[in-house]
Length: 195
Image (cartoon, rainbow, N blue to C red; front, side):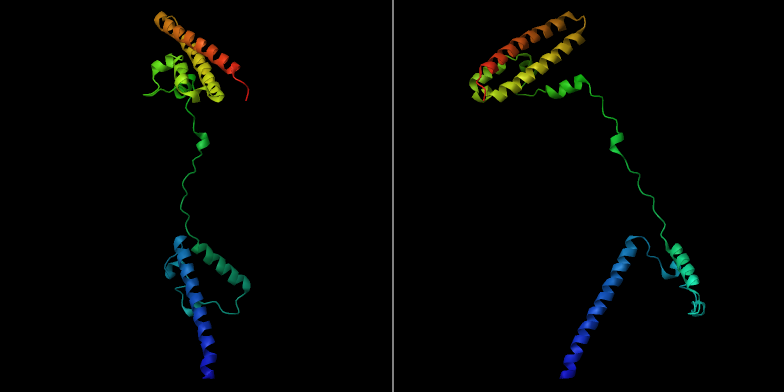
């Protein structure tokens, strides 16, 4: 009975060592496969197919063994696959940032805010009477900033209209509306108590 107790730890230790060796072999096999280095043994090294008589003797010099292992490593070195070229997005040329593109992005219209609404800034004050949240100081400052920016765009449009008198007259009419709306909004902002 004592003999069985002594051999059980040995059996467990041997099983543990065998499991470790098997895990190491699987790991090495997998690592070699992933690196593309897994080749048949005969192709991996000329010494693998050599007979036992060609095996190095213990009397060989250490330098000869080192040279043999270095040449063996050189033979086993995998062929490198070319890597894909790295693309640097910093070298992309940005689209030209013109005032027309910036204006188009900033002054977008939709179903609820049309081009006609954009030409009539006085409608803001009509909405502000029905929607008290538009009367907050920050809303008024944001609206004033928008009106001033659109007024500057109208100035650029007027310069671009050239000698087209009909287009110039329409733009001048809208500019007058914006000048009145900007003055009215500035007066409202000035009369609000500082918070």
